[in-house]
Length: 135
Image 1 (cartoon, rainbow, N blue to C red):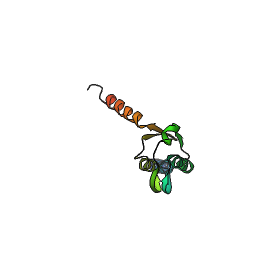
Image 2 (cartoon, rainbow, N blue to C red; image 1 turned 30 degrees about the vertical axis):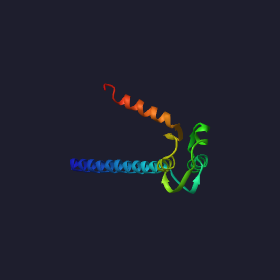
Image 3 (tube, one colour; image 1 turned 60 degrees about the vertical axis):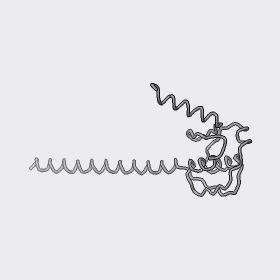
Image 4 (tube, rainbow, N blue to C red; image 1 turned 180 degrees about the horizontal axis):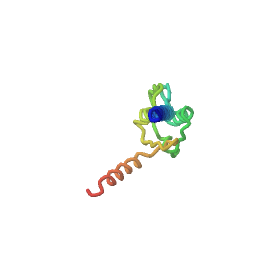
């Protein structure tokens, strides 16, 4: 009789352990989903023409991201035209707006750095050589 009770107790203990593990997994998955939504910043900008400085201010206002750049870089940059960005990810907004600009950008944590075109080409060459050490 005690063997039967022991066996039943072990089965119920195992079921409780499985339920606890499943609950922990579900809570962890929910936390990851909430975290991923926080990372994917969305922006909305509707304008026919914006200066780069106005665009930067608007992105900063909506996302809280900081910009790091040389003032001369954006003073000489052409205006951004036809900017119908509605609820798009930050990366797509930057790519669209800066497509025809004389600079590139790089996002590191909550900072967006604007790099002159010549620096971007230099980075590409450096990356090319670092990828092929033997050739």
